[in-house]
Image (cartoon, rainbow, N blue to C red; front, side, top):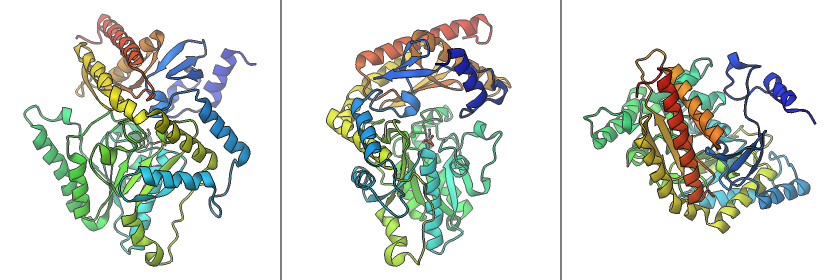
Length: 461
Ligand SMILES: Cc1ncc(COP(=O)(O)O)c(C=O)c1O
């Protein structure tokens, strides 16, 4: 067995992490997650920490579920792999049927992928394919929104609107048009929510008209903009946007990578929470509770029927992965869904989320907290330090987030700092007592950070 220092060296020298900060290469001291149980992670020193972000908004059923491990291992022993090109297997077909049942309306065609990015990538490729088959090769542009996040393949990153992520990488700019900020909290002080909603819907319609409906293939939106800071649009926003899309024959992709599988108390949030039946839904994360990788792109009968069967014109959708519909991932997803059903996890989320949201809102009493917002079991705390006029704003934002992170970690809570924001999406099995533990630690972590920043003259609050 290697000692900890050696292992940390391997990590520093050989493991290139997502969003690797290149200046820190070789000098990182990352926490090691060595074990986990329920809502807790144990680090390399055996410290027990509440997993505030639930992995990356994905570990819905919590860690250490024996029945999940058994479903995965028995599928591995029975059939670890088959080629989805020319064969099928029972778990994959059963999962496709189950997802068609759980998804809203006529979304019945499931294209399996390996993660959320490839689900979004496949959705956009499908839109292009669809318009090619329909003889409209110009209808390809995707309208997305500032601050959105849709993934890390070339296409899914291209439609992501977090500008800071684009400083050092290329994207297919010619393919995308971004609509301005949809955060209602950043609207002018004298603007009503109703006027803001009208403005945001008009942004979409104007963009379609300006680009030319004949050039616009799809609009993509997260029901709740998650990595962008848990931005909840004004009531009716998605419904109105869908109406606009239908009016101009633009497909609506609802990116439910975060919001599906119980995060908002429902299998999918598009219909149940936002009252829309989109043309395509993308999902991943909670589909397998993060135990094994899998994503899916679910397509409606309405559009699928226009380019298949007698309408196919000999076309082949030449898009897919060695691991599309992987039998082990499919078995894990089926078991995950079964656990949701037998334990009433959706009902549990609906029951406890008001308490979660109340504790979140209570944090506003702290001077360092500028805003809190949340829905279901996902929430965000935004620090006050942010000042777009300040040239050091980015540095200060990161500093504040990382200090809250450090203090909370010492106190037994993992937070996910995003610049000046901390987002929370704990495992859905969390109890009211554990919600208290989580917010008590967070409160302490913010208080300690505020004191430190004040003492160092970095914040005058
Ligand atoms: C809304 C949304 N779409 C897509 C993705 C990409 O998913 P993945 O990291 O599984 O590729 C994410 C990841 O956080 C996401 O939040």
